[in-house]
Length: 502
Image (cartoon, rainbow, N blue to C red; front, side, top):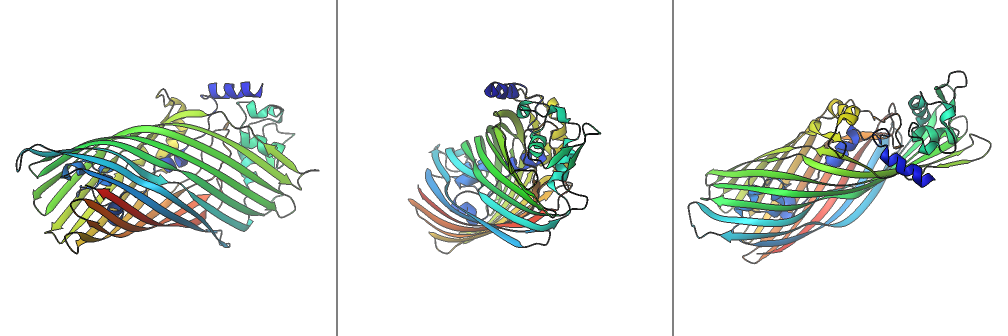
């Protein structure tokens, strides 16, 4: 019978909202600087340079710069640490390590026989690129908070009556799972005199010691099919089509110890996988030999997502016995998200065969993202889409890279990139009043810094590059609406190896 009810939940998805909001959209749309070791060494400042397979995802005109066939693979060692501080309390540190494949590409170059004019060469590429690695942990705690999650849960539950609670509450599409967890865990009480009103079990002005742990795993990948051409060694243009895939899982444990006795722990599990498509078109123009100018536009990525969630609440010292409330695993829920479109501009200057300097600017239109049903209908998502418009801003990312050719076959590289989010700063979590979601945290990256360095050897046959990247994210996360934010820095150290043949 319960399986039957879960099927009904899936069929009634227009009424039962899982409550994707601006925070989900923002997290799913972010990308990191991943690619070949040469690309990493210059911090991705390749839009006007071309000639590198990882540059194709930014500007497919990069394929027009290739003069011969190229096959390469990149391995990526990533070590990440988060250091958090909540309400001026103790500092906490968590770590994560991962080995992955950053890219695999095959570029086939075709020569037309023309030497100086017209279509000189063109290239076709089939490739794989990693866009983001979600793996990390965040751990933090606060000794004395004036605001409790039970206060938020009580306010969120207003409008739900105690008569709606029963053996099959989790399958009632009118009742949010947060209310059920709090009620059956004895940390929420309905008001007997005012049906539809709820109260926390805490006394007025009672403080709590809180703990928060976030564990994330997953990745975002892209598979590219691209074509680019070289016209008269002055104009390079290209087009690429991409299949994007994503898997993401998080486990959030939020706990409180009450000043007057009693405690609870809410563990929320959430997983999502997605698949989508986009297209990129761009050009590189050489008005004079040392100078290259570039412009490219990436279409919105049309993503289809499938997600599910579950929760466990444990409480001690709040009733005559200890309590453990376990939700069912929600049925998979399907929806669409139109990820942001992006404009990239670049400029590169080459100094004979000795060195080059490249600058790139990316502008991503996060506020243009939209949720919709699989049919494309966005009417049922008006509140979620309004939260995107109200809370998110667009993102600007300048990049600069320098390459110095020590010899004809050996080069040193250095790069820096900065990403800032132009937003309102008015963050809050929007959860529908009948959601199955119990993960109440939200937040955002304030800014990101990338520093890259590397070296490489290449001749007419072999490519061998190595690079190091240091990245730091300045972020904050609120465990729930009204809570003090947890400020933390997430730092990552990456070693990247690329091997290729021509």
